[in-house]
Amino acid sequence: MIQIRSNTFETNSSSAHTLVITKGNPEYYTPEEAYQELYWLDADGYWETSRDLYFGRSPFRVLSSFNDKLRYAYACAPSRKGRMKKSGYEGYWREYYKVTNVVKKFFGESRPFRGLDPSTRRTQHIGTDDRMLPKWLKDTGMSLIEFLTNKNVIVICDGDEYCIWTDMKKFGLINMDNIKLTIPEKEWWEEGFEENNDVDAAEEVLEDYKKEGED
Image (cartoon, rainbow, N blue to C red):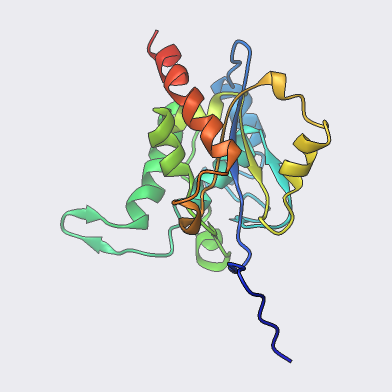
């Protein structure tokens, strides 16, 4: 039997990721601290994460460490598309190497880092349901290395059929007084709606956040 519900807009369930920035003076990973987190580095400096590199709507995850946020950055810039042209790497390849080059510069020559292990890029499922990180960085004016090293910057991975993050806030499990800014993932079908309180709140706080960064 096929059930049709009147006056109901239905979509496939999708991811519902949120960028969270907490209040207080930010603390940053030093190159030494961050490098110690990448404990699966081979002799050539390739990083084998030993962890899943796909971030969808499940399981619920809180990404706060340099290691986990770097995994997320690579997932948002997957290396399995694009090809080499005379003008250089194109498409996702270019974004993948951008992540690698930013991290290499941060670590310096004394700490070898060459990006993801080639076998990982060939064999693992790498990516996200929606590539939100580039938009978050653009909206906040945040650099990639700021995202990776600022301990006040967190990513919540959730799904719109679970809404674990929303429920945790609703039932008082999250101290919202400690949060400066939240920018939730916004689905294409939500663009014309204004009832998403998190989106509205993020837009109100965003300009103040940018001004603080300029000072």
